Length: 201
Image 1 (cartoon, rainbow, N blue to C red):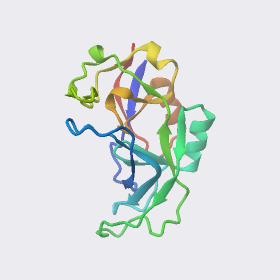
Image 2: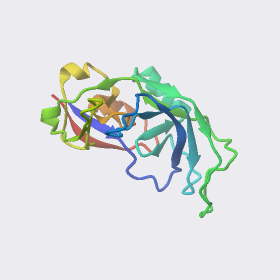
Image 3: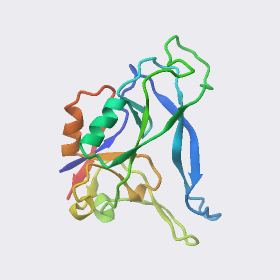
Image 4: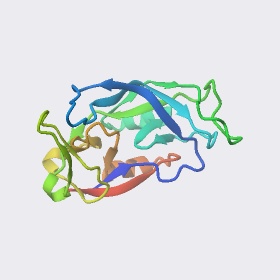
């Protein structure tokens, strides 16, 4: 079975956002390797960018995903393993250069932050992951982020619909299975994008 990364590939017609907070120290920092020890936590603070005033069913900032109520309800009803975090819309700091932009103060539809609560381990050798840092002091390893050739063992997958990957640390990169992807696509949600990145083996 194939696995897919949920990622914004084309958002010209829909509003996009930047996340401006909040981050929390999760692990003790190491003064030798400087491996990232912070992760985004609720409330997710966002600013709308000056691109469009149309909010899609999905909105994006890199791999961070924000959805509308109907997407939240669908994912919950179909047992996608994720929570839905609170969002605060902040006043934009980027000067408005285009006529179309989501207005502030924000009075649009309610927004939810998609937060997968399952993490899996890739087969490092079969996925051909490269070590980015291997700290002799704190013993932490980080791997270079990779978007193809990923191999997820069946024993690790264990039927999950949506998940993140341990080897990519605190990355917000979110993955779904082929079956889960078909379920989402059946709903014709707007501004939904994905990329094939590997297989379950």
